[in-house]
Image 1 (tube, rainbow over the protein chains, first blue to last red):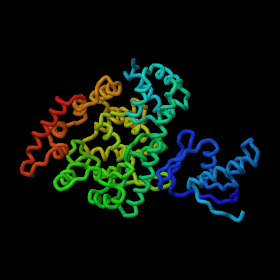
Image 2: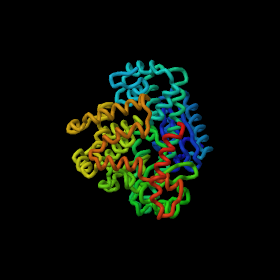
Image 3: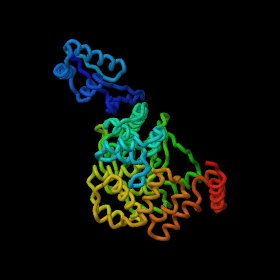
Image 4: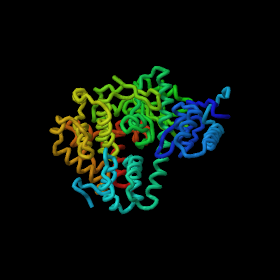
Amino acid sequence: MNLNTKITIPDTLFSQEVDDETIVLDTNTQEYFNFSSLGKVIWDMLLEEQSLQEIYEELNEFMEVDSKQIENDILDFIKSLNKKNLINIEENEG
Amino acid sequence: MKDKLNLSFEVLTIIECCKENPSKKNLIAYCANITNWNDFIYNTTCHGLLPLIYLVLKDMDIPLPPNAIATLRSMYFKIAKENMHLSSELIKLSNILDKNDINYVSFKGPVLSSEAYGNITFRQYSDLDILVNKEDIYKVSSLLKDEYKRSLPLTGDKEKIWLEYAHDIGLTNKLGIHVECHWSMLDSDDPVDIKGIDFLDGRKKIQIKNNDIYAISNEKFLIYLCIHGSKHLYERVEWVLDIHKFIKTHEIDWDEIDRLLSKTNSQKFFFLGLYLAKTLFNTEISNKYFKEFDSKIFEIKNHIFAIWNKDKEFSNKNNIKYMLKLFDNKYDKLKYINKKYFKPTFSEYWYISFPRQLYFLYYPLRQYLLIKKYFFTKN
């Protein structure tokens, strides 16, 4: 997995901003997932159909953190989403 | 202690939080006078407004006792999750009804929260309401049968009586979601007569999470909100706020409202809703309605405020005098008294099954059960 990996969000998820968090309901399993801070930011960008590369570039511009660290944080979060079946992954040429 | 509206600090706090621009100064003063925060939090849920109260108190950084904001937040998240579940289920149901050409509308619940409050989590609701034509009721029940069962399975005469007098059937799925499937907005023998309004006609499309859902037209839904709230004498502040927010967020054709109201006997029910919204939230309404706010409506308002303050108990016994003021003619008043105290209800048919030739016995049975309820049941 890398920043060129194409991610889509399944239609079966119901996502809602609640206070300072985003809650995601998997309507297949009736499980709820809460995202706050960086996870919330990345999830909200995924909902806007931004690619991982675009997310990386935007975060890199605004966050005062090492670029490699940002890339790792994004990919770690994506892996955790994948484990919970909250995303569909399509491997690209990259 | 009370202010010029004669409302307690608890109720004033709730109302201030519901205003378009709540005053921090007022909220600090009101909250400082709340003596029991557990009671207050419980009351915000009874008024259906915990999400808004939490968000306003938090965003305005109002000084609260330790744990109060954490309790409110945890309860808000619980409500938000339930609302998400109900909203996702509504989307699923709407797709099924649409695909099967069922003419339906969804009302209250997620539709109202999304349309008037701008967010499905800002209002409390615990079930879904849909309206379909009466001839489609069994078709809907059959389409949903894999997941939903009748909440109250009925057979034979009981089912016939239910279909004749009631106005909805309840469906419940294994996860506990309850859907009220209505074929009319009120019982067929309800003294509030709105049968002249076809709530399915002129339905409109709204969107929840990019999914189309059918809803009642603005004017008809506003009439419904006022009648529903007035029939319950606005036991919850939420029902007044619904009216305010719906008017604020929707274009209303007031001439169409007048045309529709003329087909009902419910003008005062409508005016009471407008009057309370105007009094509490300064809702913008047409000046022509001000002349309808007579002394009877002021008396009803005082009664409602006394109940909110807990100076009076919300009960049929206390409410009947004020409910009767909402009917203009004697026939409707008698019809109301008959329905409330004399006419057998489903409870009597449920209590005992008489053969059809002995149905007249349900009338004395009703009296017996009422006497038992009011005089021999401890609260």
